[in-house]
Length: 259
Image 1: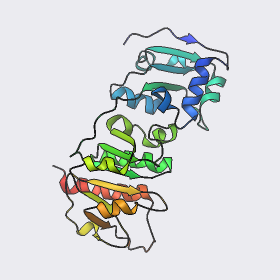
Image 2 (image 1 turned 45 degrees about the vertical axis):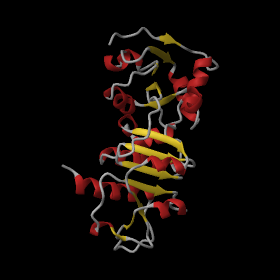
Image 3 (image 1 turned 60 degrees about the vertical axis):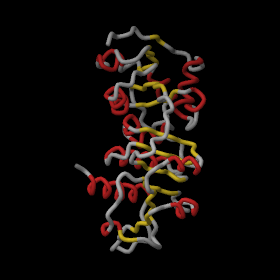
Image 4 (image 1 turned 120 degrees about the horizontal axis):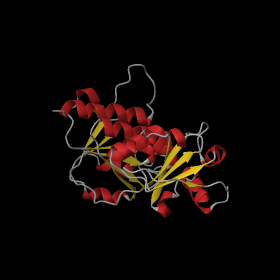
């Protein structure tokens, strides 16, 4: 791609910098603007590897002269700002030197038979991002986030996802009734009933349901589930972190059905 000459911005109250600050720090700003912020060389590279073209690339002034051509030539427009202003807009304790503004992917229809992960009110951004990473790793490409789940394209979830977003089909803000369109069995973890995970022949495709960190999966979905699964915990702990439970379950499905 050809390198675009940068636009230099130096005023903190510049309207574009105000917008960037909101995208970088407000968890739901993307819903109004239709675009989102990723920061740091890893996330930016992951987006480029998936063929996503940034609308804007923002560079620290000290970094711009040495920025690799794949970064400097990636976006429709390059912006260079003083390092202090980049630190001001960043939500990171240790700000990076590069950020992209990317367009939200177009909305798509729910796929009735796709291997899916359903998030039922999972509120911690770190947990949500971690589960997206596990879903991408183990071939569960469709994510169905019910209302009450952390904003999927928020900066915190994007950072925790480490690039997983770019290979997934994400649906958020869903009502439970949206799951009526699925033509695959729902599987839930339930510490009080169900067979041990390692004793089960798991269906494929299926949709794993992971619930709120404290309350778990809502009773409505528990009742709709075709299979209830327990994860063996010989160490005796009461429960697992929801992201850890998701990784175990998605891996078990993947191992049974790969190839």
